[in-house]
Length: 151
Image (cartoon, rainbow, N blue to C red; front, side, top):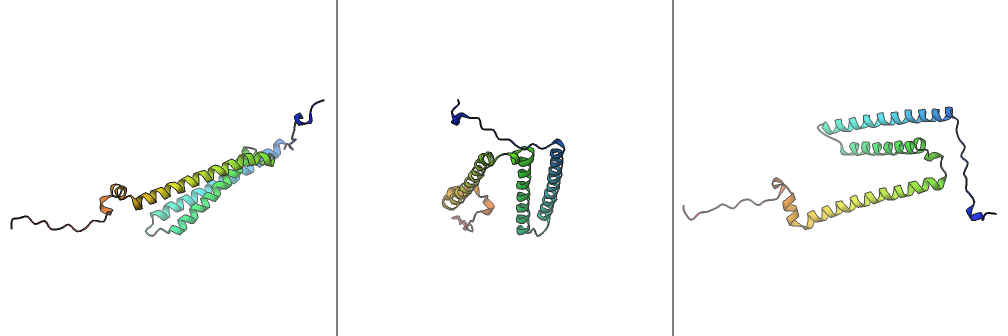
């Protein structure tokens, strides 16, 4: 008799027949195509807004936010349907999602830290500011008139 701690754990998934699976894949492919077309239209509109005389920063920011949300929706559908993560048990999903979220947090934290370092360096290190700021943007005093000893 085997010890109960060493028994095999088997999870029986309900398998779909081929027709149902193909229908699900077709539906997801069409949905991803529509989302991609919407993203392209938004990207083209952002491009035309930037080319205009008076670009609206708020409108561009809103469009970029919509594109990020649509991209996350596409990633969800790809992982859920084509990588079959939607059919897994909750613990398996969490072992993939939690490290991914930690990695995203890691990237955001390092970008924020790098930006903070850049801003502090620009404010407190005058040599850095003088060497990285183009000459036409630096504040210069009016040149004093040179007087030579001869008049």
